[in-house]
Image (tube, rainbow, N blue to C red; front, side):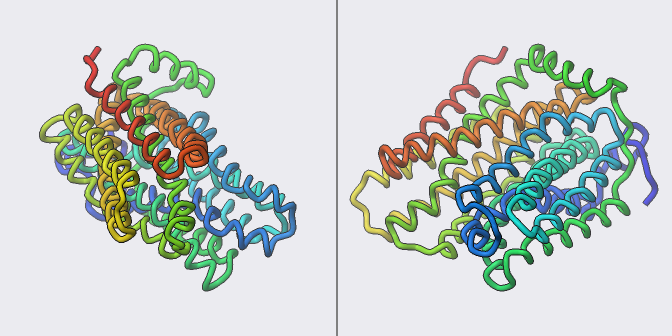
Length: 404
């Protein structure tokens, strides 16, 4: 494929946008990259039994991956405005392959910890792919295309734990990381062949990029509202998925395989997200953020009411499935609409804007995991659902507030 710059990538890109094959590549690249963060979570017990190291330190494996991802979003993702995004995506994808191989071949816990940190830093290639999709999309279809790519990203999050558990049971834990490295290598090769070049939009050095992010946060109230609202919704999202398996095991004696099946329910909600992108294109993203946040609040509120009601186990589980579909769709729809808003604020700073918004999302996710554990200890599953409902109402209130 001929390498092109989006500023003069040809009239065809402006009119029709990227081909379906390139859209699929972008969605797959985002999904497989972010999935690398979650492969270790369901196999920590297996790792403790088979890898030399202090059992008390194995919890650092997923923590270092998340920490690396947060640092990578804040410190590396803004480079997409400074460098050719194609080269940045290819470089990070190649490094992610090496990090996965390092983890898969780790002879001891310290090596696995180093691999996890490297996975987190390089998995931020997903946050380079999403702004690239926004650049390639014609303005009138930006919401739809971003929604499709974000569906791939969310599916990677939701399905990675299921895939990891199945692969580890069948082939061993090392195969999880090595097969993931093989898949990421295939994505990198396809990107090398298909991605166009992207002209940098700024010549600022790295330090200047960091300072400019402070100015963007200060000067763009729409960015602040998007980051804060999406961060609030992420609190409930993270609390639900962090505590669900624990609750299902304690209350319904369901094993990890059946618990993982709830990820499929969330994936069903995520698959509907491109519809939200189309709605954002047609009716405006502001309306979609409000509808999405309202759906999240309604879903969590319904699950809270069900947790307090004397329903049979089958009824409780059915409401959990419906609630998972509902709030996952609402969170994803709101995220797509927020990205549509944010990417239109300063087209020359899309990577920095994306980094700022996802920093808010990450803070919400981390807070949800911690607060959710506390709520579960104090008030059980009803406490988790109360926390999720409250956070969703906060997000909705931010979106319903008067626009600056």
